[in-house]
Length: 206
Image (cartoon, rainbow, N blue to C red; front, side, top):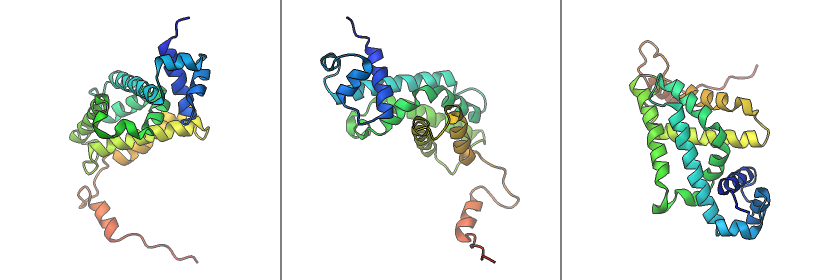
């Protein structure tokens, strides 16, 4: 019987999202195939992880295309992106922990494409005056990745309702990224500096 490679990958992704330390035997069982059959398709865990990486990149790029990042207000495009990427968030959370994927010269070029596309979205928001300019696009991109991974873990562990995933991530990210109206006499960034120089003193208990 022919083995559906995509079915095997998606079964592995679902299992590893829940249990990142799962063995190849456990992956084979989750996919409904023998360990020998799994080995014929993926020589070892590293080969499986690399295949999952390719799947994750493919799904990220599809989500980016569906989110139409160049259209409308940048904040709305960020919300669309999180909504579109949600189905792949669990897989991305697993890949996020696989350090070997992001070290050395062997890094998949797909990640650079995704980084550039998301950073361009944040740059567009900054140019339009929507997003703060004291937070770099690279940092906002990393913050988004971190929130996506944390949200996926929280959902998988039952600490967050799946229906709240997009709302919580976008509200937290945009709450920090959006540029707020300046106070009279306080140019952008001065409030942060003033707070740093004169932090609030703790109130004395009565």
